[in-house]
View 1 (cartoon, rainbow, N blue to C red):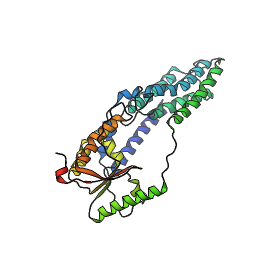
View 2: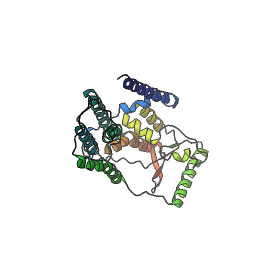
View 3: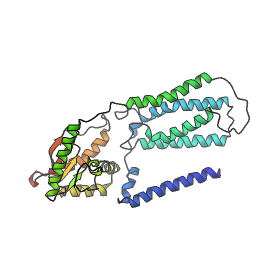
Length: 317
């Protein structure tokens, strides 16, 4: 009992130290790393919905069924020859991980698959594997029962096939870009950005920031704030201090050029995939940006939009 407790305490301590240490050296306010605990929870995503047709509960049960069945068959065949404390410990761990995965899956921005239950499924797989391969050390000596081998083979086949079906269900052909169109788009982005910088203006890349990271654009200063994924996380987590600063900079038209995905004021609701995420982003970002900036050019194929400040008379009242 002592060793597992030491492992648990050590793991928690290392995890917290790594999280806090990274937050300290990241250059970002520490409070920005806590938005995962303040995000809205969308409980409806546990059931079938537009974002995940099967729903998190149903699909996690489908993934669990073969492994749970293998464990049950092996436990029966081995005469339940494990101490009750060991059984309760494993069941408790699985229940905690399962419940935690369900809760995290309801966080806005998630719930379109069961990847948040990876820890639960991994422990379930390890438990089933140990029992099936006779690698678990029993506490009591009981004669091993025979039978049910055929059913166990069926569940082993399902345990292999179900993850493959999940992958195939979400698979789609890789979309490639025409190299000449990519070069043309890069040339346009470089031209717009260079002209803005030469005139003393700032260029904010909300999207396509990787072009700066990998040197595809030359002599364009990086503004570290307000990258799209960070902005979305702060919106979903309700980080009002972060959003107030963003809105103030937009109102001041601090940026002479904003490069983003096309912004539209279009609410979708829960009947569309990730409709809640779209709606909160529209309310907190798109609406505010489009009040003070206007689209100047859009490259439809990618898509990329260039936004420039509006004239004072055109700004939303």
